[in-house]
Length: 81
Image (cartoon, rainbow, N blue to C red; front, side, top):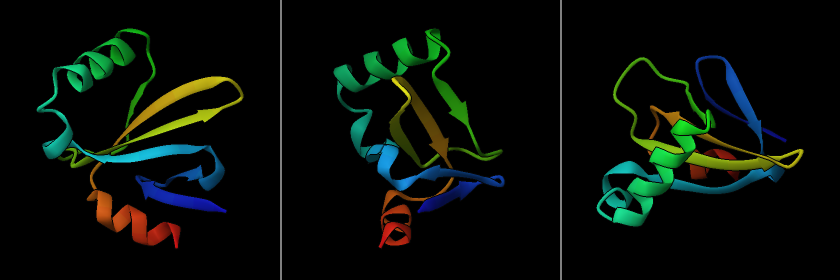
């Protein structure tokens, strides 16, 4: 099944490793370092024009991707059910 994440983009539910709220997780220096490294490696895809509220970590075909999304993590979780 595919989960719509905004801007006419969808991801496979099987490829999702985690959905994280940006406000809560970026307090950690480890999360900030992870997101910075992912951006430097070209693994970050922004799927919103507004300020992102969450990020989705996926792995598919041995490639990691981080999608910055305008939807709250709780709204994305509901879409998965």
